[in-house]
Image (cartoon, rainbow over all chains, first blue to last red):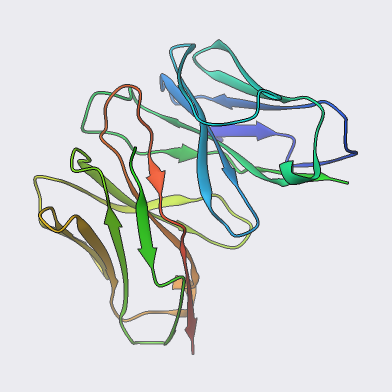
Length: 116
Length: 113
């Protein structure tokens, strides 16, 4: 059983299109994240949700809109895709951000987004 | 906010040698320091972590040390093997609501046999 699953694994699209990436976790975690990994492998936090509530929103263009219908799901919608959006997007989850000691992140397998 | 610096960016060793990767952090309130390993085309996976009330932690061939005063922590891999080749990331967080793990820029470790 996959703990954190995201779809699609690969996404190739044209500039200007709108696309979505879906993420689901079956770990019972209440915090989920989106990280972006660029071509230099840098992992940068984009968003974090705790129990469907947005708690972290880093400096990300407002073309990116996360949505969490419930605490097991966190989707990422991207409008008007640009060349610079090409990257690997990782979903992750953890058990209760804000209560130590367990902050271990469980990552999904990533979505390779290529904007042509 | 937190800023994590990681060095070196690339590291090449011979099989059997030791490898050391160092990180510094800026936020003195950070209290959780994990290390993740990412193999080519795969997801990052936790290999070891340490909390601020501990100075050193070992798990077989890997160990992590933490110096809170200097705000730096290090990953030590002994008796390296080719399967240790990967990108290693350090990270830091306050482990509190409204925060997330902030990662270093990664170290690409190559172990040659």
